[in-house]
Length: 391
Image (spheres, rainbow, N blue to C red):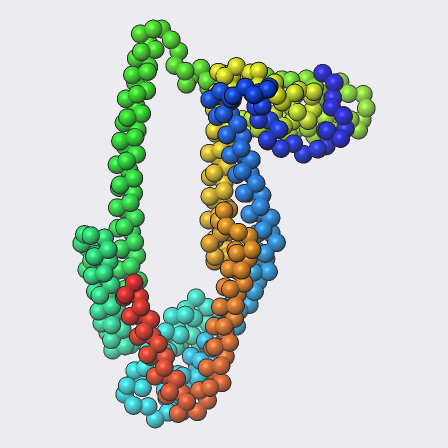
């Protein structure tokens, strides 16, 4: 076989070029349709992964850096608020109710600053963890948790398992989510078991029928044919690219690099990469697949299906990782501009939090303003608890 022209060798080959295109108006057979569909799915998944990675590379660093800076500034302001309110608790003329509001606010700030491991924050945390405060907070949490439990049980349609174990709304919500997920998993497990049982029954019937006729199961034949097909392509490429047969040094280096790609693809059963390399290296007409027997195409589809599954897993992991790192939903099907706007909104929200904390610090420098602010914060906290209970 003669090598293709240099322009063809260096050109990127799309998977669509590997699809079966029968001559004339002849319809595609089911095996040809399956082969083409798997190639299209692989090309789609590969494109999703490449686009998401490119989008992430373009925005990830700046986004995470902006969030980190805003969060650090917000934590600095929270610490200043904590120290200021604590100091005023020792000197200002507060009513009992105002003192309770101030202590509640201090505890909330301590919770938000707990991860900082700041010595001043830790000292105040030890100071404010008093039995009376703990009991008061626990009672409020227990009442909110009970209200939330009633709503969760109504949504689940069944009692919550061991509800007395959960004393806070957060624990109750997590327990409700776990039980809901268990319900979904149990339902899916039952459905999967039924599907598996039906499939096992059909497979057993096919095997029994084949055994009675002395036939080899078609699945085993397709798997064997798949390995045979990939070995054939590998041998053709190894023969065409053997570097020891090439006198030209530059060409020998090129073939050595291509052969490394061939070996890597062969080890991974990466049929699409081998087919691309076959088109790039040799004068193999991709439309020869149109003349390939259906059983051979079905065998090659076994390998393509494995690639689809692997790419789906890779895409799922990439979406989950980027969603965690960027703190916004990242999906391959989503519009890139919309995801970028989500990043910008998150940054703006975090800047707003920082600016609000800074404004609060400026506002509460006299006792009258501090008392009004404490009341506002107390009411805001109650509304937030009520909204969470309504959910």
